Image 1 (cartoon, chains in turn blue, orange):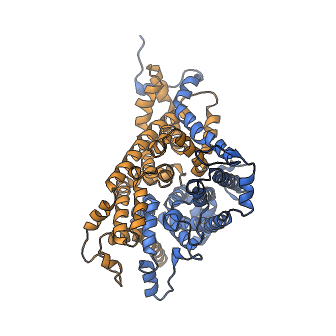
Image 2 (cartoon, chains in turn red, brown):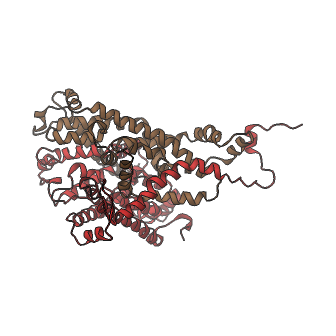
Image 3 (tube, helix red, strand yellow):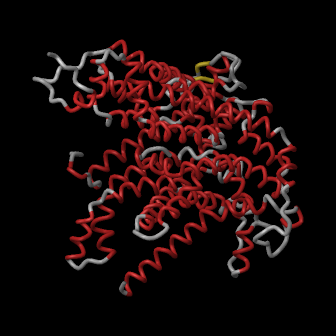
Length: 315
Length: 277
């Protein structure tokens, strides 16, 4: 008599003979993947090609695109566009400081949040909280905190005898202020570091203890080397995100004063949507794309030499 | 407990409390300012709590502009995007994890490059595309991408999760005569509920908090989202910080409430995947 195996039995039943090769379901596969296949073609692949094409044209919506070769690019590099070099300068300054600073701060925050102490879950929630606040909203709040005449921060500085600052209102302090603000939203980076720290085997720390090492030795010889893939990963992501910092300058400074905080993507947005120079804006975005692609590639190549991967499968 | 570990605990707590003050103070100051009078704005030294709680700041702020309308617009956009993303990213993730088809992994690898492509690089042609279809200044440009794959990142996240579900479940269902639709809907989705919640929450944040998308595609005030409403408000009430903070608080509160309810999912979700900026 043939009995029908129950569901559970079938799950645990040993496979008779060799595993049957799964059938190739091209039709079903394409059908289920069709949203992203269409969407990726329509909203990513074609637009990138279109951006590349438009970057060689003079174009604004409504008129037809005129082929002008490399003019958009030479105009940018020759400094004929008064905003290009200020935008590059502001962005490099901002990214160059905020990324390393953010990585160091969030790494140490993650180490603190990984200690076995009471109230740890609450602290984790608090450190993550700023991330969920819309950046447009938190930009407003920080504008008020840093308001030069009536803001609480200047009041606090003044009352403990420290000099006040014009914060976002001065060409020299505007980028440092945006960097300070960037330190407020490190929650994602912290959480990713935390996940990495939790994966470090405890016996490595015990080994250091047996050898008489202290907390610094643990940090230098276990925590940092074992976290290097995640440090690397977070750094790449932070650079890529940093280059695209838009909302903060758009809401808080509109790029001012005197273009000191004109971030690259704000410049790009203005060129396309404020001045309707879509061709030139396309050239600006192609340069951004190239920088991000180059950055990702360079860091990936160099990472081989200093990043420790468990199992050594990076070779 | 020895002296050294007491010292260490004290230092850890001191640093964590300092960090917490840094994280929480701006939020507290927003709420505090939203409840004071105009006169108290310039009071020195500033009071930590309002002299009188001016709840009418909220009504004044909300009546200054059609915030009800903006709230509704943001809700429609975010709601439609969440449904779209949950559906389309899970269907695609199913294809890339549970269906065997030639070229599947190569195509997925190609699509993954989308993770590093900035929206700024595709923004202009997208705008031209929607303009040609006469769909700028509608919600369509903001919602449509959600229904077409719903973001490479979400597909990646769900695919990782689906790959962890035992294959035997599919095989068993196939023996029972189930097709891909039934396996997707009755087996995979119920098991992946946790991952779906994470995707839903991230989609909520991405759309509710989105500033750039509406700025690029929405032009008339009646279609503004809350974020655009806020900058509108900033233009005319720039010195009236108590009203500014009341309007800001209204925008922040939905995100805060959702975070408090689903905090665990957020943090696990980010850690689970490790990506997302």
